[in-house]
Structure formats: C-alpha cells, structure tokens
Image (cartoon, rainbow, N blue to C red; front, side, top):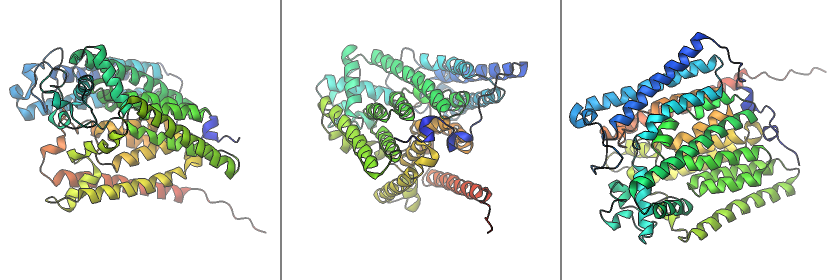
Length: 502
C-alpha cells in the first residue's frame, strides 16, 4: 500500500507554509505581552461572567444558575444600549488580549504557556452561567423529558409543563422536537437519571464534559499540527485559546466540544495510517452531531486514493463506507428511537437567522415573501459541487485541509449558521497551518464574537430586514472574491516549467 506524504507525516503542501515553532526567546517584552494579554483577557471574561446573560435573554425564569446576574450591570439598570456597549467592550478587550498573546507567540512563546493563558481566561467562564446561548438548558430539558417517557424526536420537552428541568429552555426549543443524534440524547437522558432530573447538577455535568472535551481538542490540534510539520504553538493559539472557541465551548457548553473531542482524534488516527479506527471515532462524533459524518467520507476517499490500482481503491472505499454507515446505524438502533431524528435536522433552520447566507439571500431577493426553500436548495447544490471539487484536491491539500474546506462549505450553505458552528473549521484550519487560511480564521474569530448577545439573542435580529441580510451577503461576497483573487495571483506567480530546446 502506498502512503501519501500527508499521512506519512512529511511536509505536505498545507504544512510548507506553516512556520516551524521557534525557540523561545526570553525577554522582558515577551513576558510583558503575555502577562498583559492574560490580565486584559481575564478582565474581559470576568465582566462577562459577573454581568451574566440578562442582556438579550429570551427567558425571565429565575434561578437558572447558582447566582443571579449582578443587578447593577443588567439592561434594566444600565439601559439596553449601555449594557450592550459594556458587553461589547469586554469582548473587545478579550479580542485585543488574544492578539497581544499572538504577538508574544511570534517571539517564541511555547504552546504550554499559551495553554496557561487560556486557562486563566477560562476561570470566570467556568464559574459563570452559560453565556451567549440557551442551548445548555435545552439539554437538561431533553434529558428530563426522556426520563418522563416523552419521545424527544416527536415532541418538545415543553409537554411536561413548568417543571424545574424544563423551565430553562427557551420557547423555540421547548416546543420543538430535538435535531440531535440519538446517542447524544441517550447521554442527556443518562445525566438526567444520574442527577435525579435536577437542572443545575445536570448543567454542571454538561459543563464538565464540555471543558474536558475542549482540553482534548487543545491537545489534538497541537498533535495534528505537529504531524503535518506545522507549529503546535500556532495551532494552540488559533484553535484552542481562541476567544470564539472558549466562549462557546467552555462557557456556552455546546455539544460541539464533545463532537470535536472525538472527531479530531479520528483525523489524527487517519493521518497515522489508521483510517478504520479514525472512521470509528468520527462515527462516534456523528453520534453527537450528524454533521461530523462528513469526516468519515473524507477519510474513506483519502484512504481509497492511496491504494494501488482501482480494485484496491474500490475495496477500500466500500469497506470505509460500510464501516461508517453500519456503525452509525447500529448506534442509532441501539438508542431505541430509530431514525425519526432525520426529519428534525432542519428544525434549527426555522429560526431564519440573517447570519445564514442562504436565508440572507432569500430575504434580499424578497423581504415580504422570501424564497427560503429555493435558496436552501441552491445551497445544497453548491455544497455538493464544492465538496466534490475539494475531494479531488486530497492528494495536494491533505486530509485535514480538505475536511476543513468541506466543513466550512456545508456550514455556510446550510439552513442555519450560528457562530459556534465555525469552531470546527477554526480548529482544523489552525492545525492545517496554511498562512492565508489562518488569517481568515483570525478575522472571523473576532467578528463572530459580536454577533450574539450574552443572553443568546442574535445581534442582527435587532435591525430591520433586509439590511442585515444584505450586509451578510456583501461580507460573504467580498470573502469569496478575495479568495478567488488570492488563488489567481498565486497561480500567476507560480514558476513555469522551463522550456526544453532540442
């Protein structure tokens, strides 16, 4: 069996642009940058944790965390605009702190010190309530509903009434069946059983799992970057202690933390020429969020392409597909709910968020009667075509980079986009180590911090349509145009082979 350079660990095209980790240069300036970044970021996260989630909160249910929001920092005390300004200032301070730490990184700071800074920033986030989302309370509601005998794929947890574990779920999800994969729902049911359906202990357990998942992700992005010949320190800074990552995995407790804690080791195993084990881990990640199954496809195609001859390639592709599909089907059947969840996968898209390019396109075309279905069908076509195109680049780009681009494409052309959806392409691009792609990740990491209020309400929803939709389309259009120009310029600058004269 032939092994590609990206799997064998030699420098792939993706890795050649990544700067090797520099020896640490001890100096006062480096220490000042690192300490200043740590303290400034700590100030930002402390304010966010103390202010809580009253700004933009969908619910007014009391006692959703161990302590109430500071009454002096709520919109009722400060006024909505002032409270929003202070929240944005805290996020801005944290973003600046992260960039300062990035400057220290350029002076040779090691990955372990970057991890220490990330842990410092995370302390208030771990103590404070879940911020910028209401999803964790929906998790507790799902678990309680299952324990009460409710089919979560047919009914929302709100059918239980105003019970403790359900009252934290926002109205949209309280009365909607869950789109999550059955194995994840089984996990939530187990946590609810373990803690006697009490909301706060279940929330703490979910947070503990998500923080552990983030720790695994931090280790994995460094390991993958090192395997590809890149810098573990850069991967740590961009993929692990990134404020976007910490905000939504450590504080927001999204199940993406658990998904990525399984998906990233799966990709690493594939890079280590253990594709079947990698597929099994990615299937487990798909048991948390079905979108992770994209990685199974990429690993299978990559493994097949590295075989000698078409018969061997077809056998590898069939084996990978059978293992992935069979294992996932078995996990779904063992959960006891069957395949009803497939009909709920588009439930999040009912929110019609302006941050979603397909939704933005529909509202830009007709704000009174937006062609949502048509725009989403067009998005599916674009996703399929581009994903197939990216698969043809596997031998040149490598497994991780292709997975990054397919994930980003599927997310942006999907029925709904939330900031935390971009965390897994963020981590994968950080590990892949291409300079231009890292710059794009830095930009979206900073911008997306300001797209949701601490209570989970989207910022773009504060403005009248189609203005926000048009802004989203312009941003996406500029990004695509800039990317095409970058590719064209690189091709024009590529050295041409010398002509051979007879």
